[in-house]
View (cartoon, rainbow, N blue to C red):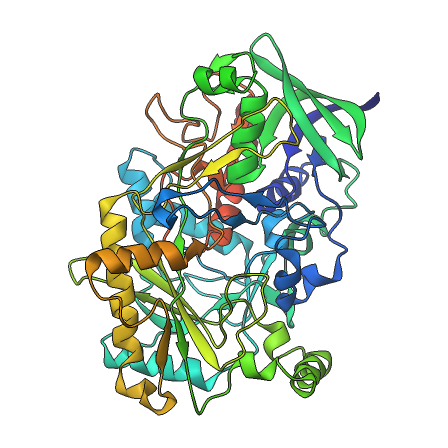
Length: 536
């Protein structure tokens, strides 16, 4: 039995939040910090080359390989559900888009009673972590850990789609991160000079040589040990060998929207019925753990095009592949430097919405699904997701085995409002593609198909072409009510020395990609921990 010793702070999960926490807490030389990651080091080449996400998703070297349960809203389909199992977590395999969400999101959290979580409260934390390539003002900052740059690519098709948006009252803007995202722009990304800038590069590497920080990979936690109502230690395996850890201070659970509720339930904290069915004795009843799962369902309408450069065509020939590779080798630009989605559009499917309610991820390519080859015809994809879904799912263990995948049931399109937005999203996409700016490309709808026009047909089509955009959140919901999992200082209800700090604590999903908000939550959580330690 390997004994890792006694620590002031033990962090479970070296994903986005865990990397931030390890850096900020180890700034104090008077505390000892242990960071545990179930995956391996991020020394896999495709982690660092932006296009490498194609080789990471579904790859057991870096991905947990989760799948959702069959989903009624998706017409009985189950989805591949990528989550990073590697140092850096999902920041090592994600789409690299830097997106804070809208001011409305955080002001809504404050309206729910969560003091200190409004837009004006969290903006300083976004700025604290940011190293923006160009802007240093009241909204952006330079000199932080997380590099944010423009993409090193442009496409005629995407420029035309921006023009089409403008023709339909959606303005061209420069920045999605000012609080009101309405408009179109090329996404800014967490990259540096055409390379992925994950949580490891941003936060761990600057701290890794501190004598008070220990980083252990291939460390899979089985359960939390308790003594006198406190987390006293962990049982785990390191590269398959049993090990133990003692906790003298705080346990910080940062295993993400899937891993955090899973660990708590394996440790006997959760809904007694769920725990009993999984063969786990209830230690502390907290029925909301694993509930409230929210995700952005992405609909992927595909349009064949003519008279335009498309990655489908470029990547089909050895000559095209060679040109793409050479451009990246010499300039760190072109398709290999590209995020999965290049152009973003925030729009309203109905003018009654106060703020944008859908987000487009527009791509000069098409494919049946992630991991499959590109179509053999020139095409573009105008992916669109509902930013504020009302559907709620769950994540729950079904076995006492830490290696068994939990049940993941998003319940997409289970809410009537979500079905209405889905149908309206397809209609809006068709309107944009039929705009004069797109006419020279002669767009022809391939998916879901132009013959589908009724509300029922469009809702069914949404279930057929919808997929996850990899934004699961809210399974350990923060709130002021007794049914919430953590309080407004991220403390697990019923325990004095356990906090959950990751995307799982979001009360409601943010309006956009979730990596930057997770960094913010960890930055704010670290400050709370430091303040509570000073207060004794």
